[in-house]
Image 1 (cartoon, rainbow, N blue to C red):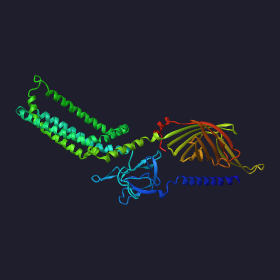
Image 2: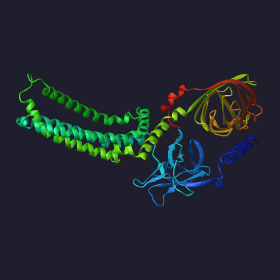
Image 3: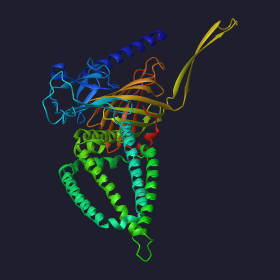
Image 4: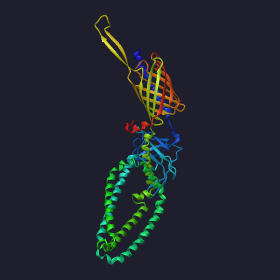
Length: 532
């Protein structure tokens, strides 16, 4: 009769626990009603990790949930994701730039990783200007790729433009130096001294005019944007250590360019020393050759000045990479947003807390001590991962049936024996916990068997009530433990409770003492540990 009742009771208990979980999750996680929400849409080029019900946050506060993502009917290559938002959230469209077809100071949606276990959520920026986005509208600015891979890709794309330009400039400098060496040796230089003086005066006037134009351009276009450039430089300084590895491939090319520039500088230095020597030590014809070649060099210089004028005009009109960086507000905003994503990514480990707890309980009936070490990893305020190592005087119990057959008429022909063995091995616990308001639900492995748990955290977590049920096949009923913990002084607490409530023969009272704290030093080993 006992063997028939045990499976039935275990099944009923599992059904009751499942019903309690379903009821609790259904009542605690209903969120806002449809009457308090409205829906807008965002188009992502990659919607991986954005499942229905994913959180939507604004300034770190949940303001809605995602609907079911689907392909955009107008652009099948994009994902169209519904955002169900509270009616108190106001999003603005921004100001349209018709030339660039971009929206400035408008609402933005950002897909980002929110925890160590691969959860994603959508972060919103409400926007500053423009009309209010109505229900059914579309958010204009969306960022789907974030983190360190995005900034490395941007740097690699930029290097394809910057390094060839540096090499071209170096080649131009070498060409000018070679041309100077060839043209300085002309014997006709003495005859054109007066003409060269006149050309030099004209060139000087042109340089002064160009300098005035450059000064006006800097005062009108560059200096007013100094704050934006300073913000970019400060953010880049924070992330320069993380980008050091990404610049390895480009550093070799920079070193080669610097070596070539150094050789050119040495050549120019020797050339200047020869040409500035006194008449007594100068080589024959040096001055005359120099004056004869200046006329041709002036033509090259004027061509270079024209190139500088063209570059200045391109910068003023926002053409080219540097021009866009100085004039495109959206590009500056995107760079700041990417740098902010990197800071969020690198702060993942700093947000994770590790709580350590040591507890010793004295079992009154058995006259024995039970020791427990807890490690809780808390990536967020509403979830944690619990690991325990337990030295339990009850030990691990196992049951075996031994059937013996005999031909001896003095004993039964078939003898069935039930053998119970208890070992003193250490037990372990590995559970996932989710908190809703003051209740925390746990499930997983509990003391080397499957188990469930519910915690009630009161008085700002100073008073905890715990209910654990596990070890379903050990006795007639599962092992049910009820206990309370009171933190009477900072880090120190007392515990008391009843273990194995349902099995009268094994029921026992216990009292205990413990200490718990947050260990900042253990954060250093998190990057070396596998992801959960």
